[in-house]
Image (cartoon, rainbow, N blue to C red; front, side, top):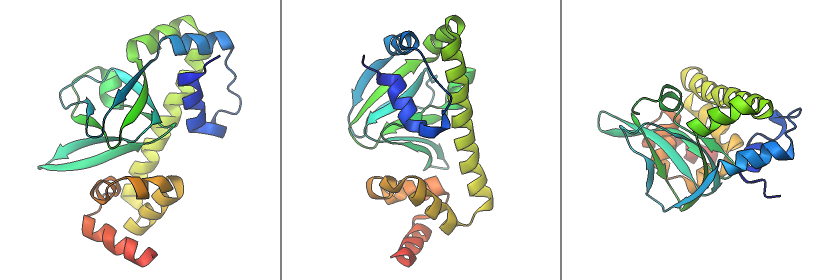
Length: 196
């Protein structure tokens, strides 16, 4: 059986779901409500003003979520293969977003709508528990990033990024890494020169 969307999410969190066993029928239901799309480098899945309708998993490629502040693009979130992404505020509140979702590489994405997720949660307890665990993991990841930006110096934030996602350093343009870390491109350049 093609495990698709579910398999990508499990790959994303690995051992964070050690007790999460989902039946083949639940997996089949999840996959039946998921669509696969391909977007080219530079294309957008979501623009400012759109209402976020999808929770996505990257099959191949690289996704960036960002917003504009005083004319500058501020990278808030990055996701590559087997990673989950969504604009959580707009997704949960179903209100127009201030964020963009852009492809940094040609990307293949698994997408599931909020309406479909909610419907599946109503009819299937396994999916409801799975979705709750998934949401908790995403919230914790966002909280860790926020706390890092508040409490950790720039060098530690960079080291944490390299440790958690070494491929970002090779695949994401420096200007986006700098804004993701909350530093200027010049500061990022100084940090990198000390690492080498």
